Image (cartoon, rainbow, N blue to C red; front, side, top):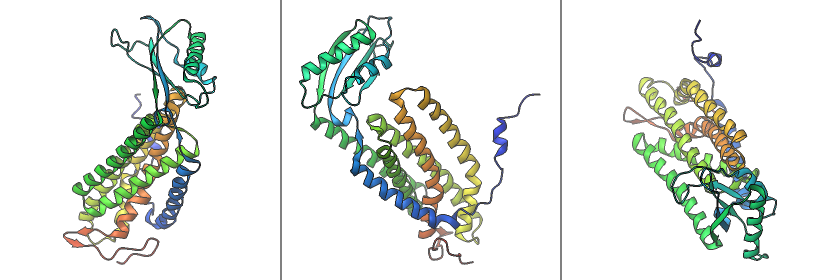
Length: 328
């Protein structure tokens, strides 16, 4: 007999009745403490900036067409020279414009006390010893000024993305929802930065892409909860706001869990088998999905409870204190 769907999904209850708002104050305090700790961690000991943001050198390595470069061997050989973070990425061949695995770009740091020419020569020798005869070209040095400008551009991209998400929610729902969404987004971004600082993950352009993805995922989950909340506010006009919030979160909980777990499973495989280059990216994304789901429940929605919303053109009763009984 054919199996109907994935059997593990049957373990999820079709209907839940968790009192999320009841514990909103405790989780709100926890979130505030973690955010403060994350901000402190980003300055001390600080982010582990990669080559993109710290500066260094790069060179192009190529084999004849049809032969494949072993990127892991190159990364290991250059890493043994003690040059800090090493980045190796496959690129398209210059003559054909096709990515066939025969060409890569290698990025590495150049210690200030060492001669640049000598360091590049040592890197070339290490690569040749690891993967055999190759050709080198396009040796370039990225200075600290360019790296700092790139870092500021990355931070600006994160800020603009967050602002645009706020504008989107503002126009789709109401200012109250927009404020709750932006608080949740800032919460997710700060905690993800805190994890990067705590685990000393390399903060590179890949990590900026991971945080932008976290912003998108967090907003997607928040929109699902807010959309159901708005629908229930119209349907249950006499129900206290805290109960409407609990009802809305419970009704979207199974969808949130299935979506989040599915994404985390894929990212876990990527972290295990994707190599060193994708490990930090995958870990940051997994953590971001978890905190994004958490913030939709215990950050965004409780902010709306504190602020109050409009029902049928009239303002909801005075904002409710978290943890206190709501008025009938």
